[in-house]
Length: 116
Length: 111
Picture 1 (cartoon, rainbow over the protein chains, first blue to last red):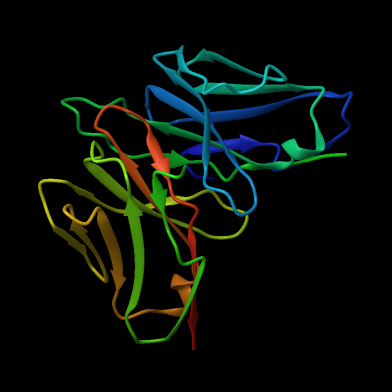
Picture 2: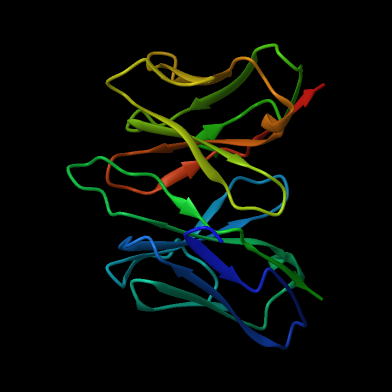
Protein backbone atom coordinates (compact mmCIF):
# COMPACT_ATOMS: atom_id res chain seq x y z
CA UNK A 1 0.00 0.00 0.00
CA UNK A 2 1.11 3.57 -0.64
CA UNK A 3 1.37 6.16 2.11
CA UNK A 4 -2.22 7.26 1.45
CA UNK A 5 -4.86 4.53 1.68
CA UNK A 6 -8.45 4.92 0.55
CA UNK A 7 -11.34 2.56 1.21
CA UNK A 8 -13.43 1.25 -0.37
CA UNK A 9 -11.87 1.04 -3.83
CA UNK A 10 -15.29 0.73 -5.46
CA UNK A 11 -18.72 1.77 -4.23
CA UNK A 12 -22.16 1.53 -5.79
CA UNK A 13 -24.92 3.34 -3.96
CA UNK A 14 -28.51 4.35 -4.52
CA UNK A 15 -29.62 7.94 -4.41
CA UNK A 16 -31.26 7.48 -1.01
CA UNK A 17 -28.29 5.74 0.62
CA UNK A 18 -25.79 7.14 3.09
CA UNK A 19 -22.20 6.00 2.79
CA UNK A 20 -18.74 7.20 3.77
CA UNK A 21 -15.38 7.21 2.06
CA UNK A 22 -12.29 6.81 4.20
CA UNK A 23 -8.77 8.08 3.73
CA UNK A 24 -5.75 7.38 5.90
CA UNK A 25 -2.18 8.66 5.60
CA UNK A 26 0.95 7.57 7.46
CA UNK A 27 3.33 10.14 6.04
CA UNK A 28 3.26 12.61 8.89
CA UNK A 29 1.61 15.18 6.64
CA UNK A 30 -0.48 17.92 8.16
CA UNK A 31 -2.87 18.69 5.31
CA UNK A 32 -5.39 16.43 3.61
CA UNK A 33 -7.60 16.95 0.57
CA UNK A 34 -10.57 15.50 -1.25
CA UNK A 35 -10.60 15.71 -5.04
CA UNK A 36 -13.18 14.65 -7.59
CA UNK A 37 -12.08 13.26 -10.94
CA UNK A 38 -14.89 13.11 -13.48
CA UNK A 39 -14.44 11.80 -17.00
CA UNK A 40 -12.80 14.30 -19.35
CA UNK A 41 -12.56 16.98 -16.67
CA UNK A 42 -9.66 18.34 -14.64
CA UNK A 43 -9.23 17.26 -11.08
CA UNK A 44 -11.58 19.33 -8.92
CA UNK A 45 -10.61 20.28 -5.40
CA UNK A 46 -13.50 19.67 -2.99
CA UNK A 47 -12.16 20.11 0.54
CA UNK A 48 -8.94 21.03 2.27
CA UNK A 49 -8.07 20.30 5.87
CA UNK A 50 -4.97 21.87 7.29
CA UNK A 51 -3.97 20.95 10.84
CA UNK A 52 -7.40 19.30 11.15
CA UNK A 53 -9.31 22.50 10.38
CA UNK A 54 -11.24 22.91 7.17
CA UNK A 55 -9.81 25.82 5.25
CA UNK A 56 -11.61 25.65 1.92
CA UNK A 57 -14.64 23.87 0.53
CA UNK A 58 -14.98 25.32 -2.95
CA UNK A 59 -18.78 25.51 -2.88
CA UNK A 60 -19.32 21.76 -2.85
CA UNK A 61 -22.98 20.67 -2.46
CA UNK A 62 -24.04 19.86 1.09
CA UNK A 63 -24.74 16.25 0.16
CA UNK A 64 -20.96 15.86 0.54
CA UNK A 65 -19.84 16.25 4.14
CA UNK A 66 -16.17 15.93 5.13
CA UNK A 67 -14.81 14.98 8.51
CA UNK A 68 -11.21 15.10 9.72
CA UNK A 69 -10.97 13.67 13.26
CA UNK A 70 -7.15 13.83 13.30
CA UNK A 71 -4.25 14.58 11.00
CA UNK A 72 -4.07 10.99 9.74
CA UNK A 73 -7.71 10.35 8.86
CA UNK A 74 -10.16 11.97 6.53
CA UNK A 75 -13.73 10.95 5.71
CA UNK A 76 -16.21 12.01 3.07
CA UNK A 77 -19.80 11.35 4.13
CA UNK A 78 -22.24 10.96 1.27
CA UNK A 79 -26.04 11.22 1.34
CA UNK A 80 -28.78 11.65 -1.25
CA UNK A 81 -26.30 11.78 -4.09
CA UNK A 82 -27.19 12.22 -7.75
CA UNK A 83 -26.08 10.09 -10.70
CA UNK A 84 -23.88 12.95 -11.89
CA UNK A 85 -21.88 12.56 -8.67
CA UNK A 86 -20.50 9.31 -10.06
CA UNK A 87 -16.75 9.81 -10.34
CA UNK A 88 -13.37 8.86 -8.94
CA UNK A 89 -12.84 10.47 -5.55
CA UNK A 90 -9.20 10.99 -4.67
CA UNK A 91 -7.71 11.76 -1.32
CA UNK A 92 -4.34 13.46 -1.07
CA UNK A 93 -2.05 14.66 1.67
CA UNK A 94 0.82 17.10 1.84
CA UNK A 95 3.07 18.94 4.21
CA UNK A 96 1.73 22.47 4.50
CA UNK A 97 4.03 24.86 2.68
CA UNK A 98 6.84 26.35 4.73
CA UNK A 99 8.59 29.41 3.38
CA UNK A 100 6.18 29.23 0.47
CA UNK A 101 7.74 26.09 -0.99
CA UNK A 102 5.02 23.50 -1.53
CA UNK A 103 6.07 19.89 -1.32
CA UNK A 104 3.52 18.54 -3.72
CA UNK A 105 0.93 15.96 -2.98
CA UNK A 106 0.76 12.25 -2.33
CA UNK A 107 -2.43 10.78 -3.67
CA UNK A 108 -4.39 7.69 -2.73
CA UNK A 109 -5.65 5.29 -5.37
CA UNK A 110 -9.17 6.67 -5.17
CA UNK A 111 -12.69 5.35 -4.68
CA UNK A 112 -14.67 4.72 -7.84
CA UNK A 113 -18.20 5.81 -6.92
CA UNK A 114 -21.26 4.91 -8.98
CA UNK A 115 -24.62 6.41 -8.02
CA UNK A 116 -27.60 4.52 -9.39
CA UNK B 1 -12.61 28.98 -17.51
CA UNK B 2 -9.66 26.61 -17.15
CA UNK B 3 -6.56 28.19 -15.66
CA UNK B 4 -4.41 25.23 -16.64
CA UNK B 5 -4.80 23.76 -20.08
CA UNK B 6 -3.45 20.66 -21.75
CA UNK B 7 -4.73 20.98 -25.27
CA UNK B 8 -3.71 17.55 -26.47
CA UNK B 9 -5.99 14.93 -24.93
CA UNK B 10 -3.81 12.14 -26.29
CA UNK B 11 -0.37 11.52 -27.76
CA UNK B 12 1.22 8.45 -29.35
CA UNK B 13 4.98 8.03 -29.57
CA UNK B 14 7.25 5.24 -30.74
CA UNK B 15 9.40 3.54 -28.10
CA UNK B 16 12.83 5.14 -27.88
CA UNK B 17 11.67 8.48 -29.29
CA UNK B 18 11.02 11.71 -27.40
CA UNK B 19 7.61 12.41 -25.85
CA UNK B 20 6.70 16.08 -25.43
CA UNK B 21 3.68 16.96 -23.34
CA UNK B 22 2.54 20.56 -23.26
CA UNK B 23 0.75 22.67 -20.69
CA UNK B 24 -0.42 26.29 -20.79
CA UNK B 25 -1.65 28.44 -17.94
CA UNK B 26 -3.41 31.76 -17.70
CA UNK B 27 -2.79 32.94 -14.15
CA UNK B 28 0.40 34.98 -13.96
CA UNK B 29 0.45 34.46 -10.18
CA UNK B 30 1.31 30.78 -10.62
CA UNK B 31 4.92 30.25 -9.66
CA UNK B 32 5.28 26.55 -9.02
CA UNK B 33 4.44 23.75 -11.41
CA UNK B 34 4.27 19.98 -11.17
CA UNK B 35 3.71 17.03 -13.41
CA UNK B 36 1.85 13.96 -12.22
CA UNK B 37 1.51 10.59 -13.88
CA UNK B 38 -1.60 8.45 -13.46
CA UNK B 39 -2.06 4.79 -14.31
CA UNK B 40 -5.57 3.31 -14.55
CA UNK B 41 -7.18 2.53 -11.18
CA UNK B 42 -4.43 4.38 -9.31
CA UNK B 43 -4.06 7.88 -7.94
CA UNK B 44 -1.71 10.37 -9.58
CA UNK B 45 1.94 10.10 -8.56
CA UNK B 46 4.33 13.00 -8.46
CA UNK B 47 6.83 13.07 -11.32
CA UNK B 48 8.77 16.32 -11.46
CA UNK B 49 8.38 19.98 -10.48
CA UNK B 50 9.75 23.37 -11.39
CA UNK B 51 9.61 26.76 -9.72
CA UNK B 52 9.35 30.02 -11.59
CA UNK B 53 12.93 31.00 -10.77
CA UNK B 54 14.12 28.25 -13.12
CA UNK B 55 13.46 27.53 -16.76
CA UNK B 56 14.53 23.90 -16.75
CA UNK B 57 14.59 20.99 -14.33
CA UNK B 58 15.91 17.56 -15.18
CA UNK B 59 15.47 14.21 -13.44
CA UNK B 60 16.73 11.20 -15.34
CA UNK B 61 14.69 10.74 -18.50
CA UNK B 62 12.30 13.53 -17.53
CA UNK B 63 12.90 17.23 -18.16
CA UNK B 64 10.46 20.05 -17.56
CA UNK B 65 10.88 23.37 -19.37
CA UNK B 66 9.18 26.58 -18.27
CA UNK B 67 8.61 29.61 -20.49
CA UNK B 68 7.18 32.26 -18.17
CA UNK B 69 6.64 34.90 -20.82
CA UNK B 70 4.55 32.47 -22.85
CA UNK B 71 2.94 30.92 -19.74
CA UNK B 72 3.87 27.57 -21.12
CA UNK B 73 5.59 24.50 -19.78
CA UNK B 74 6.44 21.18 -21.30
CA UNK B 75 7.52 17.77 -20.14
CA UNK B 76 10.06 15.88 -22.22
CA UNK B 77 10.57 12.15 -21.82
CA UNK B 78 13.66 10.75 -23.50
CA UNK B 79 13.82 7.94 -24.42
CA UNK B 80 10.16 6.99 -24.13
CA UNK B 81 9.38 3.52 -22.81
CA UNK B 82 6.15 1.47 -22.93
CA UNK B 83 5.89 1.77 -19.14
CA UNK B 84 5.54 5.53 -19.59
CA UNK B 85 2.07 4.99 -21.09
CA UNK B 86 -0.26 6.79 -18.70
CA UNK B 87 -2.21 10.00 -18.25
CA UNK B 88 -0.02 12.99 -17.44
CA UNK B 89 -1.43 15.91 -15.46
CA UNK B 90 0.11 19.33 -15.31
CA UNK B 91 -0.58 21.28 -12.09
CA UNK B 92 0.11 24.88 -11.13
CA UNK B 93 0.22 26.65 -7.81
CA UNK B 94 0.43 30.11 -6.39
CA UNK B 95 2.88 29.44 -3.55
CA UNK B 96 1.00 28.68 -0.39
CA UNK B 97 -2.26 28.01 -2.19
CA UNK B 98 -3.75 24.86 -3.60
CA UNK B 99 -2.91 23.33 -6.92
CA UNK B 100 -4.94 23.68 -10.09
CA UNK B 101 -4.77 20.70 -12.38
CA UNK B 102 -5.06 20.47 -16.14
CA UNK B 103 -7.36 17.90 -17.75
CA UNK B 104 -4.52 15.52 -18.57
CA UNK B 105 -2.90 14.08 -21.68
CA UNK B 106 -2.99 10.35 -22.36
CA UNK B 107 0.43 9.17 -23.57
CA UNK B 108 0.74 5.90 -25.44
CA UNK B 109 4.25 4.62 -26.09
CA UNK B 110 4.17 2.04 -28.83
CA UNK B 111 6.68 -0.83 -28.81
